[in-house]
Image 1 (tube, protein in one colour):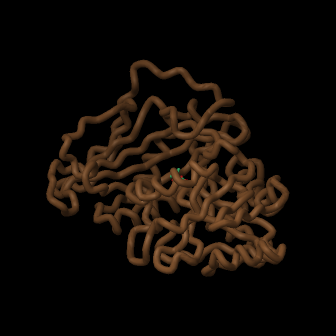
Image 2 (cartoon, helix red, strand yellow; image 1 turned 135 degrees about the vertical axis):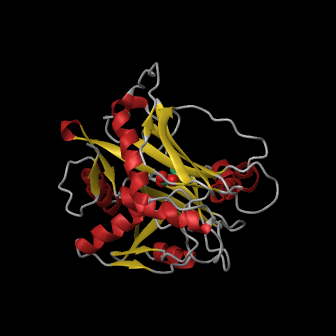
Image 3 (cartoon, protein in one colour; image 1 turned 30 degrees about the vertical axis):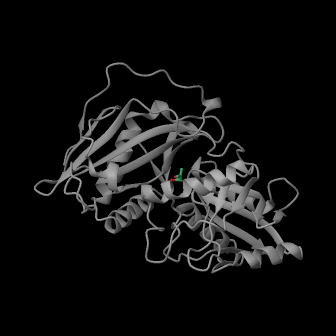
Length: 354
Ligand code: COI
């Protein structure tokens, strides 16, 4: 299948790299492709970025049959552009598609399309420290229909956004709020899927966190409300007695690619790293006796995000001395050095965009 390229007539002015936020600016072009049962995935095209018409009855608007991914293109020395483990994103995209009854894509083709778009938009890859070009592949149900079933037609699109830090704190400790009242996902549900509804479901508890001065919600398991799951925009790690602990992939948390990279590096460096159930009580107890050394999150958008405080019930667990901890720093440096081409890609994680 050949991707048709229709270039934009006038190009947008580039933003100033040094004041990029997250997800507010979009580039000149986007990738689009459609699915219907007779033609399968067809008509791949790169065209000017813009809105597309949707019937008010379009199924995605009503029943949320929608999935997405998030990955980044980085500017490396010598003006090279590189992607970080993109094949993992497209593999997970197809896993999400299966679970949400969306027809799967040819992963190689989708990755090639993403690279082609980034190549065309290379002037948009920012170079200021900590910035990158965020890539958002998305698939949505397009049938104009109000009955509840899987749609027959779909749109796959990729948009690009030059970004800075995800949290306003940047690479500084964030405060997280453990909600006791709400849950994000349950076993057998769609917690491990990158689907729109998971994020919608998280908003109410997020507001509660913000009203209390916290950046994000730390979710507990949906059954016992006892075991730590994830933060919603990132996976979570604890360091207790020099052991790096992260909740196991139970089916209700996202299998983060940055999470996997942290685990791979920790193993390579010979540090004890365990994927297991960890209860919030264990975290509180470890903190109480001074054994909780660090806590940090990991995610594509969030990269490595140190956690400086956890609020649970009436307890405020202050972690570290208000500064970035040494483990978070170590993983942040190692991962970003590979992403930005400052260190050798010993793990074969980087894909050049020629
Ligand atoms: C990412 O880390 O890329 C995400 O998708 C999280 C988020 C911005 C919702």
